[in-house]
Length: 589
Image (cartoon, rainbow, N blue to C red; front, side, top):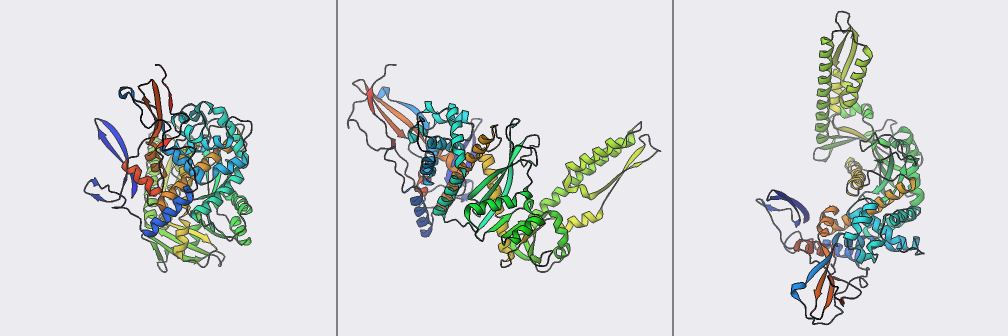
């Protein structure tokens, strides 16, 4: 069972629906039945899901926020023609986010780190507002203060009136939160380990970048460099993230935007080990981290590693890759072969993938066609010239063409030669390098993994390496779903605090993902949040015959799909929110 989104056209408009369905179709009709009839977890699965729900929400108290009884007379004469609804608020998604926040005990740890003082609103509460907004509807602090907060039921959940939530207070909450980054990270690691029995013996490490809008002149870490966001025109910072094999975060560091990945390994590995101990962990990293210096450092310090390598290193194992013997199928369409490393000791793993081969072959063909089309146009231009042309601009144009199509640039041998017989005075000659084609034919879809783990099978090594996609997914989630980019803050400390808020929102995201997976609800937290976002709270105002009003703050009854979802998560949706005085004198209109 999972949440699925479908789009229907009606009256010329597009309507989107999110439904709890099972992955079974009869013709074009999607079957929807009760949990007892479909998608039901087996007995051990139900037991695990129930135990997890108990660990997450079992100790949370709601008595101070919710009530199921009214404090007014049991029978009140009501003017039915004047009954109305007021103060509609988004409830379901922020209530779930607040539940996750308390399940991770972030409320208690921040209350300890940021004890109440003379401030009107506790800084721990304002920090929760920042993170919950980033989880539910990522936006600027100004948008949170002016629009988002007053449209949600956080005023009831947190007990903080909307008129005291302003952008200045949110900015100052960022400043108060940042100094406690390390303590918060350590608490998160401990709490996630308690909830999900995580294995920290294998860590995935990757680096990405996020760019700035503006000059970022006050930030010493903001530089131009290798932008993963394809925004070389903007300054950016690099973020080094370490996650477990499940993609659960262990910690991160913010680095200068012009820092190359290969120079970060010793610093990040040393930082994480100083923080969490020198266990015999296995470090899994992508090819951007690989260098002979890093490999030597990892081996000398006794650390275990599994690293991707640059494509250029594949030539060292050309003979082994061309040999058809000793290949092992590790997955349909993927084969691997273990070989000795260049020093004859540490093993390497050659991998070839049919899917990757087809992708690289298509890329080579596409880039090759672009290069040949550009060279053909340039040749035609030279042949039609009526005056002498300078060699320099022509060579720069060729350089730009090859730089725009790097995957096939090495395939062509290009020369600009003098030709006094033509008006241009030069002509262009180019040929295809057949050795490049031979190399591409057997290297397409192949890559090399370096490791010092000698007691694992090729399948274990490969399956471990592809878990790096969890680290890459963490960056995609933070950039897209949690709007890490672009960064609008200009002060260095505010940038660091913004990234910390995004990190904490990602922690909530991954907690919800693990929770829903173990409850048999797939792995899309955004779908869960959007489904529950439609659950609102509202005030039911009942004018009485004696010119008074009964005001009941209620939560909208969930739909069948929402009720099934909440049941799977082990959550009890409150029906009514506590108010100071439900019965009051009517206010003249």
